[in-house]
Image (tube, rainbow, N blue to C red):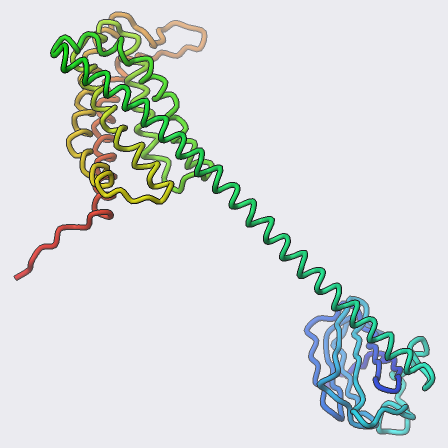
Length: 377
């Protein structure tokens, strides 16, 4: 049979309680069974026999009150505070039933009390209990305060986030309303004469809006909005490529009717999109605006893709001739790049990216409006 190792147990008492200290450090897997007549403890720890599984079985001299008893497993020892039964508060002549004291049981003279000291011990325990209650209340108040501070921080962040997003979307909406109004007024009063003057009339404002739109890629990256990055990146990158690298540098395109068409389609899309985003941030449902958001892309997105593709196609021969944004060999880096050929390849990605965007909007429309129910026979 495997040897049974017993830990060193030191005991003391007051008139009301027993105090037991098991000299075991770093106790693991402790198991305690306390009844009115018996205490059984076992656990793995470091004791007089080194790191072993220790077991001790104590049969008390008199019954104890288990409901008022407790124990603590500490780093350097295991401590029991066991209450004597009510009505039997007296000093015991020994701890265990057997008169012969085992070798592993010692008296803890540091905690031993005489009958005269029992009352002061009781008062000390009461004071200690009151102090523990005060500390617990203080910790609870501190935790409540921390929770309130965290809630306040979150509310402030939500307010700043809401204010910023509403301000950004309304500013963008206002600028695009201005662009739309200018283009419409030119079209009404000048008819086809509006096409050559569209670029000069709104290009500066439109360029500012498109540069600001880079923030829409940053917003999901830093968690301000809970949307994907791919859709806004494709839209912002594609528009800025067409505007700043195709239209702006090639003055031959400025007076084209396609430029008017492109600017007008872009502005119509954003006049709907930005107010819709602002209302979503504020949690306001405007049904006509929701319908426009999930419906007007159907004619506007294809027109926008067609206008962008047309301008890129018109710009390719101009870029072949000027070699603008191209890198010719030989050079220090030994690297060649043809921007006009890049645009030829980009036309394929424009169609693919446009298809992705329209599929993305179609899915959003299906989620918002639901699929058309069909009857089955």
